[in-house]
Length: 457
Image (cartoon, rainbow, N blue to C red; front, side):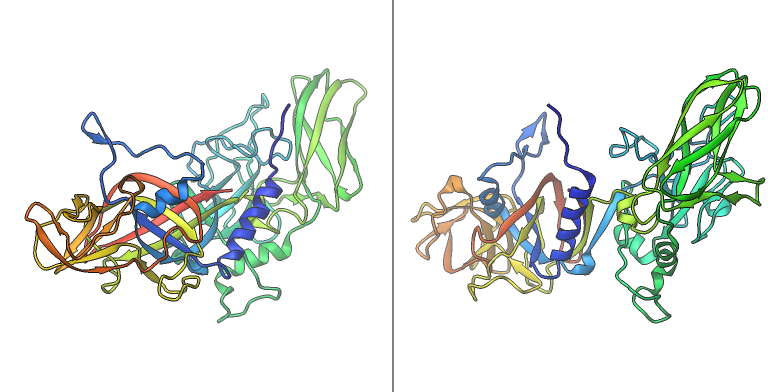
């Protein structure tokens, strides 16, 4: 038995999630102030399992959360950076590895943050794929209509330019952000989407049902000249010609002319098409067409680039103006939807919340990650930060969540507890959507931690 979740389903789920950021209160959480178990003297993060304890585990070590705004989230796709001498695969709607892709992928990003779709790979005289040697930035540029065949015989389509500010915030070594446009009319200078004008033009100029490539699956034998190639289907305008080497068809192209002056005959309106090869001498050649997704390449970049990933960018600025602890380390990231504010008993709406409990201790020496025990109550906590007279801490299920009291003394110096402060959030509320255990990241009062988090749907 074999089954899959389709790209359409995954993309739909991704879009729904991104859209929900404007209505659901999502918070990025920092947690786990104490060390992971040591293996050969090194901390090794615990493995995560999908079970009903995952939510409590997050809340047990949660230190602080910060709201995710709509502008903190982008669709994204795996990154493939163009490099001369690399042989790229072409987009192929029937490719069994289209989703997983090759190490090169069928699209690239350039040093100028331009994204190009590879629609046909260069072919040598034997029909083998050749390396790309012409940088699409110079060979194609930001042409927003149609496609371009470069002098190395690659056919590229310019898709979009990632603005510098977007790249700075969301581009990583492994993923590229893919903007989603919402304009229904052409943006003009001053509009929020004017910065994406090239992408808007690509969307507007996309050709539905165009055929940009014909894949030769069997070159046949005995061909003495270029045979007649006919595209048969429910669209119009696609015409093609074949190259024959040694009696074998090595390539079929849909453009005529020469470098710098090609005419592209990709047609339009094809939902179904086949290739008929007619020749009086040769026989056995088989080819199939590659049809663009509905609307045409460029109409919906997140579909063409299979952007069923979401990237978050959020910065924790030191202690967030005194709102959260800023010393020690965190070892866990989480995404929590609709946690409840402990003061209002309603869904949290603030920007930053301190998820720790706190004790007022007039003096003492405490280390982040240290375990403390109440002398009278037997309560157990893990120190997050001790600053001034305030000791922030978390508790986990192993301690039974026993509360400290003002009768307690704690620490090696038996320091007195004078008051108790509850967490800003109500424990185990909302929904824990994502958890990641990682190596320790040290915090500091004058330090900012910018977190880029990628979730795959």
